[in-house]
Amino acid sequence: MTINDVGGLRTQVDTWRRGGNVAFVPTMGNLHSGHLALVKAARDLADRVVVSIFVNPLQFGAGEDFDNYPRTLERDAGMLEAEGTDLLFAPPVAAMYPKPQDQQTRVEVPGISTLLCGASRPGHFVGVATVVCKLFNMVQPDVAVFGKKDFQQLMVIRRMVEDLAMPVRVVGAETLRESDGLAMSSRNGYLTAEERALAPVLYRVLSGLKKHLVAGSDDFAGLQSKAARELDENGLRTDYVAIRRASDLAEPGPGERELVVLAAAYLGRARLIDNIDFSR
Image (tube, rainbow, N blue to C red; front, top):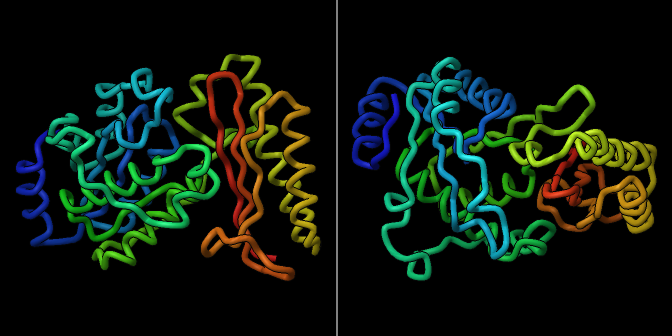
């Protein structure tokens, strides 16, 4: 079942909520196995599963790939139907943002939204928080599932839900990877064959960082610099490599146990991101 308008969505979900609970998976489409893993996780958490496909203009900055972002709605709908999704919500931009974007109310999660990817993409996480807030209000799910590949996004959404007292449980699902370790992403489709062969170095470098940290190293600055050089030497262009506290993305202190290593790097047309969270 595909619904494009908010009224039809709410009518259907209200019916389902009288007899069970609802899980929600928001996406921008161009689906792959990683998205379907989120749908499977949602199915285990609720009686009904709603998936949205909406390429959100508010989270794309000037010069980014909004116009060229792959839109494969018909294919995606078939994949979701095969996976047993109960409802696909595929609204047009006018349904999500009936006012001009410069007049659109925005949701901002301060601090955490300006770090890392937020520093490289100013305003990106305001766009993410705004659209997820709107989607939560439209779908009114009991639980929502997001992939850990977008670790900072997951943290922003969890903070928003906590601060705004939203009655939604946010679940982070493990990153699904290709056989060579590359995190699955819609933007991997931008890679040429040569670039695709280089791309797994991102995960290998992060795995090396984790190994040093688990062994007890607290030389965070030195490890970050070495990892960035390794990425650059292997054909990528480093945006950032960071070792952070897993709970809030703050810089860790000596002996910090719960950590996440994160990186973003450019490879051809693609901006690749990845992370590994762990205890030591």
